[in-house]
Image (cartoon, rainbow, N blue to C red; front, top):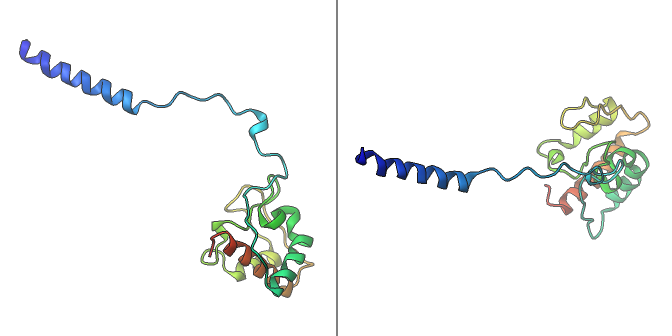
Length: 146
């Protein structure tokens, strides 16, 4: 029996050490209602570029007039309304410029976010969308998304 005591003690010591090292952290208190972002708050923080190209300036005006109500000021998203466009999901290699044109013309079925479907934007021309895309792309570049 003595030949089993030392290995058993070793296994118990290892198990206890592993438990103490790997044990889950204690559950934290439930989030207070005030820690949830407020309805309409920006979803991401956006760094502004030093300056915008002339086309992006036109795009910013069009964005502010048509898109900002849902996509937030500076395309930072708007809690409860719409996603941020200054986000890796909308980088050019994943959502090319034509995706923005098609979204404005046809609307978009919700697939990346839980804001619901985006309706078509019939008052926005392709020229408007191209300028808006120039603005969004310059904002993305200023935030390391390219």
